[in-house]
Length: 152
Image (cartoon, rainbow, N blue to C red):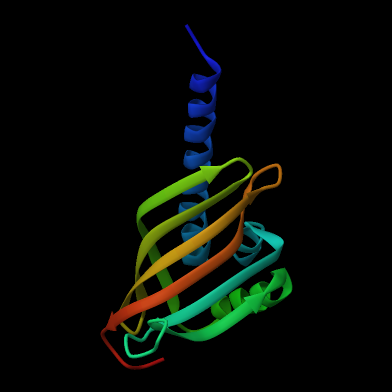
C-alpha cells in the first residue's frame, strides 16, 4: 500500500537523480567545450565562486574569482572554451540534499588539463533551485591541490 510518505521519498529520489545528472552533464559540457549547454544549467541570478584552499587564511580559502549572473558566468565559460588547453573534469562522490524546491550538494572533482598534463583536485558546494528543471543557483569550487606542469 502506497502512502504519501512513500510518494515524497520517491520524489526526493527522482530529484536527487536529476541533480546528479545535472552535475555529470555540466562536466560533460565543459569537456566538450559546449558553453551553450553549460550556461543553460544556471539560473539567471546564479553565482559561481572559484577559490584556492588556503589553510593559513581565517576561512581556509582565498577567493580567486566571483561571478554573478548568467552574463558573467557565460563570459568565463566562453574564455575557457577558447583557451589552447582543455579541462576534462570528472565528478566523484556527489552527496545531494533536497528540501522542497531547493537542494544542495557536495562533490569532489578531479580534472586533467591537457595538453599541459596538469591535474587538479577540488571540491564543489552547490545550491539548486527547481524552475521546471533543477538548475544551479550557486556553485562554489575550491581547488584543493594540483600536480603536474606549471604552464598555464
